[in-house]
Length: 425
Image (tube, rainbow, N blue to C red; front, top):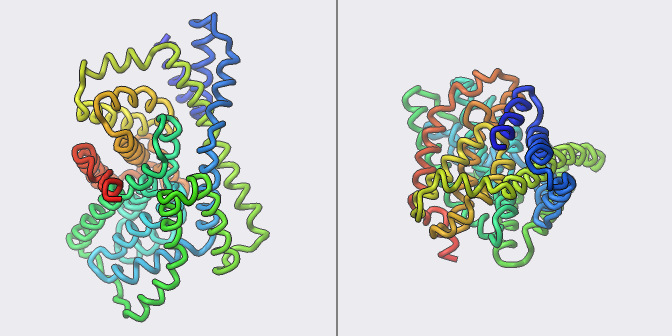
C-alpha cells in the first residue's frame, strides 16, 4: 500500500502536476484498491474539515495585507529607515537587506511577499556597489525566510492548525528570538564578506536625515507592535489581528501614503484570492492525505521505525528536524507541516518537548527547506521574480544554508532562544 501511494505521487510529480493532485490521487488509489470498506466520500469530508478551522481565516487576511504593502510604499520606507543607520558600514547594503527582510516579514508573514517587496529594490542596490548577482539573490532568498519565524507567520498558523491546543500567540512570540538570531548571523557574515571582497561603503547620512527616515517608517513599524501586542495581551485573536492588519494597511497606503488608489484594491484582492485558493487547496488535500495515512496507521509504523524506544527530547527534535528539512526541500511547507506534524507531535510531547518549542523547530526547518535545493519553493519564486535561471539562483546559497543549519542546531539545543520571551513575559 505504501509503495503504491509513493509510486502514484512520484509519477504525478515527475509529470509536472501541482502537489495537491498527487496527494489526492494517491489517496483515492489507496482507498479503491486497499481499503474497499472505506467510502471515498470520507476524503471529501476531510477536505472540507481541513479548511473549516476558524484559525485559517487569518491566512487570506495576512496575505491581503502583505499584497497591499508590497504594492504600496511600506517596503521602501523600511528600506530607507534601515539603510540610513547601517548603509555606511562595511557590508551595509547587505545588512540593510537582511534587516528589511526581517522587518517586512514581521508585517507580511509571507516569504514570497518579502522576496518581491524587498528583493526587487535591494537587488539593484546590491549590484550597484559590486555584489555578484548570485550573492545578492541568495541573501534575499534566505533573509526572506525569516518571515516564516517572525510574527505574523503563516507557517505557525498552519502548525497551530495541525497541533492541538497550541496558542498561535505564544508561537508568534517564540519566533522572535530565532528570527533575530538569523538576522545577526547574516549581518556578521555580510560584514566579513564585504571586507574580504572590498565592497565599497555607502554614504553616511546625517542624524537629521536619519530622523526623517525614522518618522516616515513609524507607521509601518507599528504593524508588529499592534499584531503581537494585541494578540499576546488578549485584545484580539490572531484572526482579528489579521483583519486589523488589512485595515491598517489600507489606511496607510490609501489615505496616508496615497500610493494606492481605491480602484487598485480589486486587482490586489484578486491576486490575494488566487494565492489563497492555492493555499487552501493544499490545506484541504493535506488534511485528506493526513487522515488517510493516520487511518492506515502509517504514522505508528514510521515512528516505530525511526524513533527509538523511550526517546529523549533531543533525539525526537533531531529526527523531526531532519524529516521536516528534507520534506520541505521537495514539497511545499504547508503540506509538510500538515502531514508530518500529527505524526511527530504526540511522540515529541510524550518525550517532554515543549509544544511551542516544537512549533518553532518545525517552522524553522520549513524555512530552511524552502530555500534549499533541489525544489525549495523560494528558489522558484526568486527565479520568476528576477528572471534568472535555476542554477544562477542557487549558486550563492551554500554559505547561507550552512549558517541556517548552525542556527537550527542552536535552536534545538537551547530552547530558551525560542521561549525566553514567553518566560520573561
